[in-house]
Length: 347
Image (tube, rainbow, N blue to C red; front, side, top):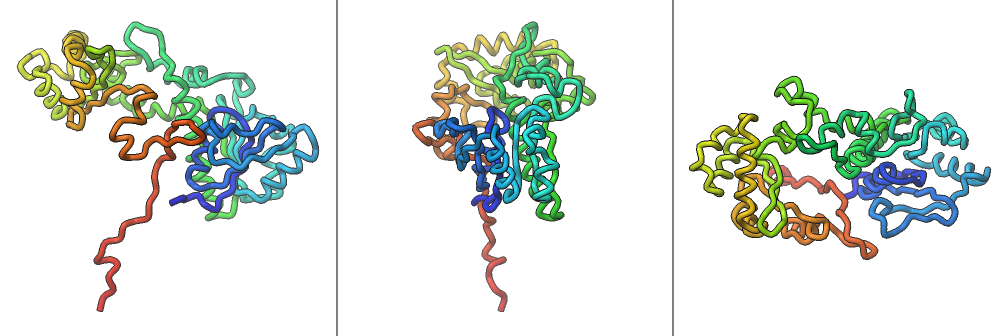
């Protein structure tokens, strides 16, 4: 089922978050026209560029500008990830394109946003999540902040947020007949992803430092541990019933020190005990004991290992295209399953 089938999107070629948005829209049925520079077509082996129709355009020529205007005039949406003002200087800004197509949803993806003191500055994911207050939270106690690759700014707070915004804008345009301009800034998206932690600061006493809180490796029951074979497992036994199972399976139910589950002062010592325990078995041996239980357990798999895990195989979570193993489109849509009673005609 492809919920965006019939939607046409013009994507101005770029890198990172805007292509991720284009991938999400294409994965769910939209026709995405990927506008690229002469001689630089989308790489079919790049998962972020899958599902596109390539359109070669020379944006330095009047003919190329006219071509993009014509594409936008017949499209439902456009996405671009240039610095603020670039599209306007090309004559392809929202005002010009909306004059010909008032229903157009115009999605703009930047790091700092279209306005503000930093709007024209260069930057990358690490800079955006730093300013958002997110990077400060990633890392272990006493260590410097650790960037979570570029998942939080570029993709979670950028491309995914823009894909949501485009979908919302397209729905609004269908209802009202009026398009919109979306200002999607990775700084604000990264901050938004931290909403629960912002709430914890006022409701649960979340400390504004790394590695000392319940979800940031401060707690012994929410962390990764090395196993006998040098691999790792992930434990997330927060709720009392899950913590009870963890203690039962590991034999720690006999150790009264572990009764102090929610006492932060006890966490370092309990973590040391768990570290010693998990090094007594291999990762596979711990999987045999814990996987599929309510302990909240998972092996820490490498990117090479994840596609072969039985659960991921059963779900079809990974696919192969152009010889490249990559995550499958998600989430999944299906038609509703009607009950027999609702489909049977009454006599």
